[in-house]
Amino acid sequence: MPLVPSRPSILTRPASSEASFTNGQTRTIGQVALANFTNQQGLQSVGGNRWQESYASGPVSFNAPGVGNA
Image 1 (cartoon, rainbow, N blue to C red):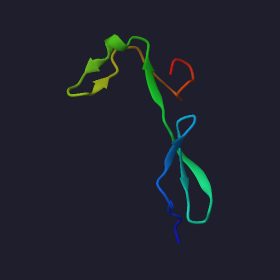
Image 2: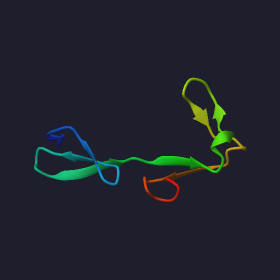
Image 3: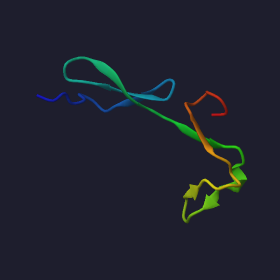
């Protein structure tokens, strides 16, 4: 029988998502990651509210909230 969350997952510090399961266990099931660029003004618009990395923006770096420049 698969374990399923017994209640909705919740965000906890540091921006982790936890779920409580029907067997009484609580597990971290995800974490928020933030993307940073050396030059945010160099991001290229691809329509709507979407942007992509470009040569001018520099490479992406991912961090947890509160780590590095996040």
